[in-house]
Length: 217
Ligand code: DC
Image (cartoon, rainbow, N blue to C red; front, side, top):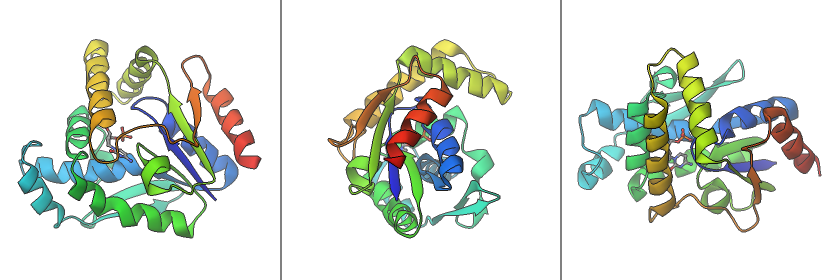
């Protein structure tokens, strides 16, 4: 069985999907990590996100893979485990900027489809229900107000010891929303057969229970 969860940054997709995967015995696939790894590669090479030709050319040098160690997803960039290096705001912005390029998206297509074809997965991202897994048995479009998304992200990063400012996070999320929704290739949008869920006033447990019931059905 495949469950697709799409939605904007900070809607709680990964928190919810991780808990659900545990309860249902599914594999959780965080597709953002795949795009983030590619962005890290471009940052290391010092390429500008606006340099479409260079990004497309360099995409051919990149192999991204996933492994599960003690149930946790690890992402590999050309064989190196980069899971701990891809959660900075610098990488977040670069990722949103480079994920507009068809070549970047194409590079990650098979990885995502293969894992879903061979496992029960809960996959989160932006275009899972619309593009990657159009036949997923359950599709959720998870969202929340920009205020609550920014606050959640702020708390998460603070807890990790990062020095962050709430207003700046809000601006970055708004910028990412804008870009993710308006890009030409596979933009963030609700699939026609996806269930819309606004989690602004819901607890994590409420959201997990709700989706679990839908999955069981
Ligand atoms: O889910 P995330 O915050 O880790 O995603 C980071 C960026 O990656 C997001 O701004 C857009 C891009 N992304 C994408 O284009 N398609 C996906 N399936 C997942 C992420």
